[in-house]
Image 1: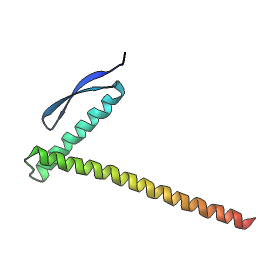
Image 2: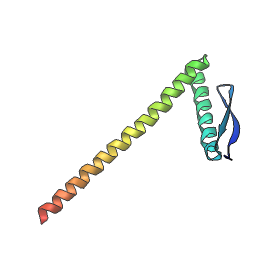
Image 3: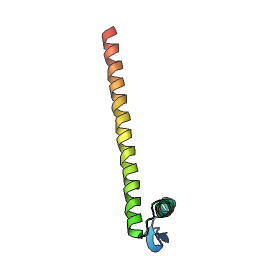
Image 4: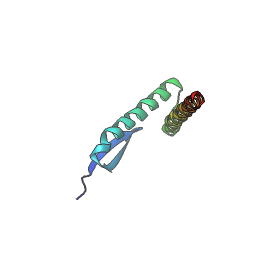
Length: 95
């Protein structure tokens, strides 16, 4: 028998029932909290009245943040590869 947990998350004043594994609960609750905080921020700072608009703005901000992290990580890996290649060339030249 699978060990599933039934929870209810509130996002943008709507309740969403979910059946999840217990290991997912904390992450989902934190994500819902982040979304609700962003909605509140958008409503206060940008006079957003429609929850749909606030949710779209949240989705864009969270997705762009994740994408930027991925791009930054890729750039770091590329820099490391270049440095390693330079080290290997310098070792080869000393032989």
